[in-house]
Amino acid sequence: MSGKIADEILNNPQLLSALADKIYDKLKDEIVIKKLEETIASVKALQEEIKKQGEAIVSLQQEIKSLREASNKHSEAIASLQEAVKKQGEAIASLQETVKSLQETVNKHTEAITALQEAVKSLQETVNKHTEAIASLQEAVKKQGEAIASLQEAVKKQGEAIASLQETVKSLQETVNKHTEAITALQEAVKKQGEAIASLQETVNKHTEAIEGLQKAVRKLQRAVMKLSIEVGSFTNRAGKGMEKTMLKLYRKALELHGVDPKKVVHGMIKDEEGLIEKGKVFEVDFYETNDYVYVFEIKNLADKGAYDQIIIRKKLFSAKYKDKKIKIFLVANFVDKKIKKKLEEEGVEIIASHVIK
Image (cartoon, rainbow, N blue to C red; front, side):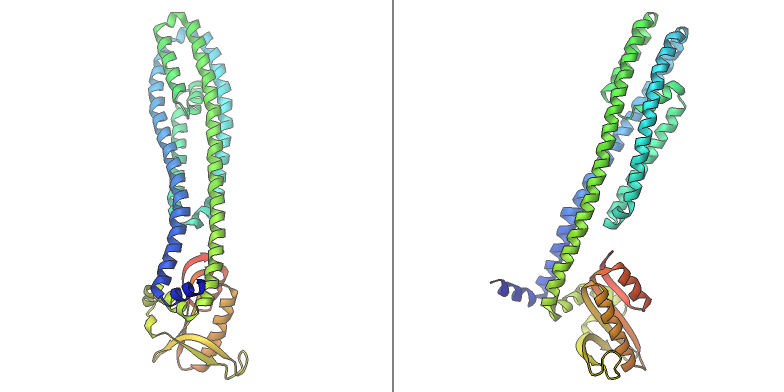
């Protein structure tokens, strides 16, 4: 039964082409795009949260400015509050080191993410914008005074903690004469800010885990692509010339851009008359001849060192046989090894491939 199905596939080039498209779409849609969309959505949500926090900070700055004017007479009590805020500054410095470490981790992942697909460039741009937003927030906080600046920089995840602090400030303005009780309430709010910082650190850790998860997904995808390459390569060997014709059709537009007419390509033999490789040995080739050129084609699913050796052999044989014409060699492949691609290009071979792998 399986043999009959295989024969039907081999005798139907359109079905072969559709099968290749389905395999590619499944990899792209279900593995790559899904992971990227989840990561981009997470970053966008984080940016929106930072924007809301910025607006809350501006409002908080106005209220604190009024509070400082009313509280000049209570410098001794405020000094105690500043000491507490100083401790918060030390916690913030630790958080900054964590964020810096996270940024370094993101930079190390750049190469792997870039290799995934061009869509990841959008993710990197989003991360860069996120970094700029954080830098802008830090610059604004510096202008607010040493004690308050440290507190504001720490408030990256405000939510209920900021609302609580705003309520405390309002209460302090209304009951400035009862400064002892108000300062006690503000100290309690500072304590909550410490808890907010701890929560933010936990968020940073989760973000790091998410990036590591993406990196694992990239490695799984690479293994899946390699496995698929081997499986399709095996299938191509069984399919023989039918698959070669199908691949020429798939890459027809690319070949036409190089001035090549895929319809003229024929399958034939070339004999080693001069003993360049092995005298009298016959090699199978795909080629066609014009008045000025001989176009030679090597069609592979995965172009590795074996493909390189075959192309060099055919280049030598055709150059010896057609001394009065120019030899133009093309490699048509789904996958090509990066090192092999470079070596073939140095030999003047035109590479038409869907994916370059390491």
